[in-house]
Length: 102
Image (cartoon, rainbow, N blue to C red):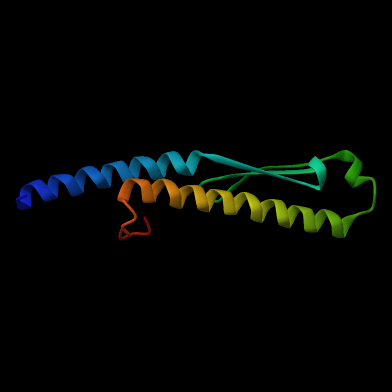
């Protein structure tokens, strides 16, 4: 394999990784806590998309419970996003770590 062929292959992989990263950034990941009273959705870009809190929970004076459920739901959704991103990028790169955080 000559240098020009390697360069073309590297450029192709770079384009595929950029496209995958763009798609992953828009992917959403959901988490539900407390039997569905707290729901969180995050994007692959690690941004919180939505937080839904059941009205019944707000009426209970359960501030500490709500805070804990929110923290757990957000951390769970972010963890799903990170794992999915790693899995999909590893599939593209064959597990080879790429410069630039890919």
